[in-house]
Length: 256
Image (cartoon, rainbow, N blue to C red; front, side, top):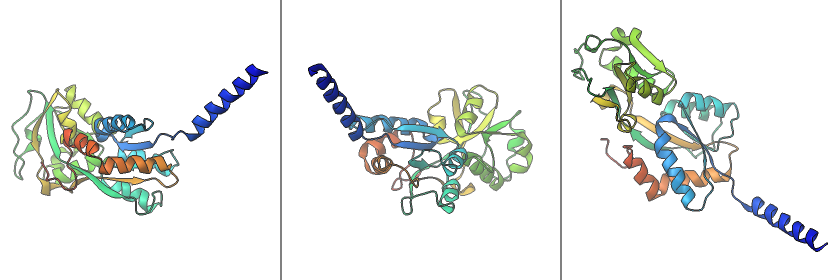
């Protein structure tokens, strides 16, 4: 009997502890945020919180998943369009949306294989290299949307459109260039910075495309832990330092 009582007491203690434990925040974030948000998740865990569940991918794919009812608490997009998409479908908590970060669009090449390029109208980029140019799927993936805007602004799109390889997300485009399968690519400066296998040929002029903005918001029906994590991302010095380390700009920071 005593042993049974002890076992029952232990079971109740375990159940009580489990019931009182916080659930992990579930974060759906753009692929270009992988390194930074992973590090922030680790810093969050050191404060005594459970490790967040992190899901990374193209903003377009993640938005569709959230719309379909995926178990997300927070959505971080690499552009405004896909956040607008979810807001129009009333999938976000009203008033929870804000612009979190900024980034720069760059042209990259495999290390040591950069062609001579001038970022100006009149320069013939199509003739400056052979092969394909990799970026996110134009019109769908944020980096591809920015890339098409920039190439069109510089009057390069018409000659290059047939040589564009549209990928599922920006990290896939980066991988193609790292392997030399694409001699040029268009990614974010933060993606280029994490790779030792590529180099930045040039940055696209700010006026050639819409500003690269990363909005974040709470998903309707999500857990309270998601709101706590998002608050940490937005306001903690630790999160700000991590974003800056990877090259992102914060709302009050100048563009690099």
